[in-house]
Length: 119
Image (tube, rainbow, N blue to C red; front, side, top):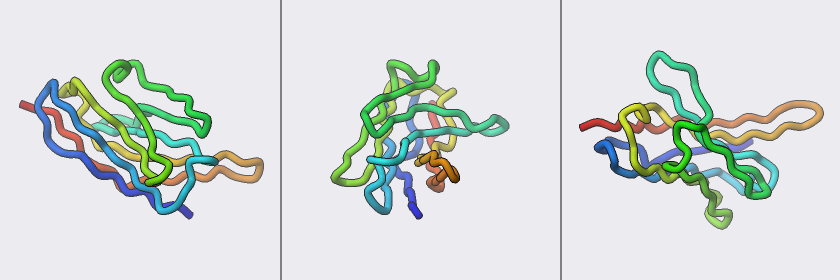
């Protein structure tokens, strides 16, 4: 079992920056795919960024060039650096850890952290 805790959300003006953190309860990055999702009011949850255990990354088109996902294995922490923030980035951001096996999938979610981009 894995617990994930997000932090770093808040209110920021358009064009500003925030760095979100996702702290895991134990070392999991070697076997889990880590990702950030977000959900705005009235919309479905969408994938924002993802990392793999081998260092690959993937970003939604809407955030490419502005967001960067990274990890610190020593701290068991995943980060999402968000630059040039836009009002449409406003959402609750969730950290996710996923592992697919032959028998079952393992999915863990953080509680979410609110990001609000507004003047």
